[in-house]
Image (tube, rainbow, N blue to C red; front, top):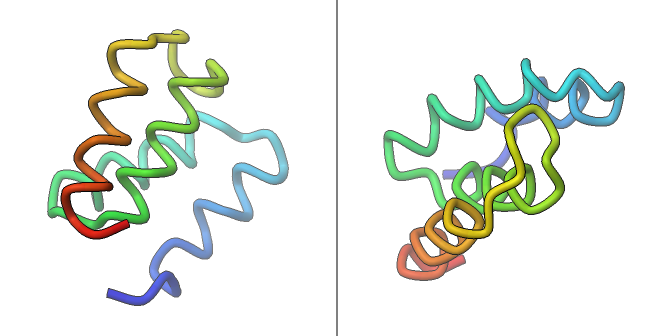
Length: 69
């Protein structure tokens, strides 16, 4: 899966509209998209749009890595 489908989420993130970015990433991550899973890990690491969580950071990074990211 290319990352063109994540363009809107990246634009939102860069505008600091973290909730929108996270909503989009969650949707794609649930479908197995490794880029979205990675970005969710970053969001949890930084606390952008979600509560900061080391557990969630590791979980999303692990899923992304297992998927080949």
